[in-house]
Each structure stands twice: as structure tokens, then as C-alpha cells.
Length: 353
Image (cartoon, rainbow, N blue to C red; front, side, top):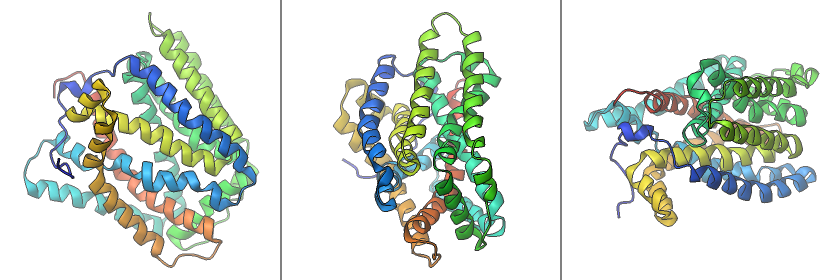
């Protein structure tokens, strides 16, 4: 068995297939099975030292979260359909080049870069949930309406990105200030974050309410269950981010919600992964995931290690480490989001590839 997969992932017409209905209930059970015990620990973690509260972020960065973008090179090769090694090498180089360019922008415009990072993460996490809602839960109303699609993406992405600014306002502010300091070597007072705490609750609440109400009006026959799952999931997410301490909630969401769903999407595109999913061969599925994501994950972790090793600190070990780590994640988020946008264009298209 080969250790590393080099073959492009094919984006044939089968890449637009819907996942089996049975997976909808299965994914919900798996999510609850993972989140409930983590939620109990998270609820108890409120008074724990910050280093302990960062445990889910460690998991998301080094075990679950980073690998979820580890197949991007195979996806690019499959979407653009070039086979030369020169092309493959150039795409491998383009990814870090784009990341480094964004890092340079952080240095020149750290505040604008921080805002852009929050905005692009809202979009990316929202588009991840949209795929599952459409292709797994059969939310056809999101396919028929551009407005509902936009509201769904913004609502789902704003819950994990903005709600922590309401529940853990001071930590949220310090985290953003630290990212700005690490990126641009400047101190920037984000007192606006503390003065407008309610903003971070109202925006996701209004977006979610609008999306659910307008979706209910647009339902076709048979879409009631999809809307019900939509409602159930946002209720779970609101409860999660309003009850669990922010650092614990965010790290767990990234590892066990967003990354898990994106991984399912990748494996459903991959013929070997799809076959393992269909027959329930989960050990083979894990081995396949290591094949397609292992190399890029190692390279990304080496880059993150380099960033963490830079002498950029003085404001407390935990938040300083977190600021640098999230700076590293931010520069990888941009090229990864571009890849997922290209996937969206192909997987929602009605045309033959």
C-alpha cells in the first residue's frame, strides 16, 4: 500500500452526487457523540488555566484541523486537469507563495488583515456547512435561492466567529490584538470590541433568524426534514458557543465540526474513499485519509512550527502562542478557501465536467 497519494482527484459528474440519506442521521449522531463529552469537559473548563482550555485548539491545529486542507493539491490537480510534473510542482509552490504574500500584507496592514481573516473564515466555515446542508440533508431551497444561500453561509459562519466575542469578550479582544501585534509589530487598541459586546450576539442571531424564516417560506414538498435539521444544527451551535468557554468551544468546533464535514466531502469525491464509506470500511477510510492528506499536513505543520519559533513574544505565553498559531492558520486559510470555492463551482454545476 502506498504511503502518499499523488494521483489527482477526478471531478467527474459523480463528484456532484448527493450523499446517501442515511448519512444525515449518522453524521448527526457522530457529531453529538463527539460534542457532548467535549461539551461537558468544556463546561467544567471555565475555571481551568488557559493552557488547559487550549487543549481542543492543540487538537484542531495538529491532529484534526490542519489535515482537513491536506488534500488541496490533489483537488487542484483534478479540477484543472493538467498532468505534467511541472504543473504539479508549480501548484505546490503557488500555495505557500500565496500564503507568504498574505503574511506580507499582515505586516503592512495588520488591522485590515485581521478583519479580512475573520470575514474569509466566516465565509469558508459557512460554505462548508452549506455543502452538507445541500448534498447530505437535501436542503433544496439553498440551491434555488441565491439570497438564502448567502444568508445560510453568513449565518453559519458568523456563529463560531462572532459569538465568542459575546461570551468571552475580553479574551476575544486580547486574541485579536495579539494577532495584529504578531502580524504587524504594532499595538492596536480594540476597545470597540469591548464597547460593543452585544454586536457579536445580534449579528449571528439576526442572520440565522432571517435565513430560517425565509427558508421556511420557500420549502418545496419533502424539504421539511432538511429545514428541521437546519434548525436543529443552529440551535446546537448557538447553545455550544453560549454555554462553553470560548477557547474550548472554538477549538472543538474547528476539529470536530468543520474539519469533520470537510473531510467527509473530500472522501466522497475520492473513488477509494467513497467505496470505503459505502461499505463501512472505516479503518480503510482512516488509512486513505492519511494517504491523501499526510504530505501536505506535514509541510503545513513545518511551516507553522517555523512561525511559532520566531521571536515574536512578550504578552504571556498562552495568548502569544495562540496569536502566532492563528496568524499561521490565517495565511493558510486564504489559499484553502480559494480551492473550496473552485470545488463549489464544479460540484454545484449542472454541466458535465
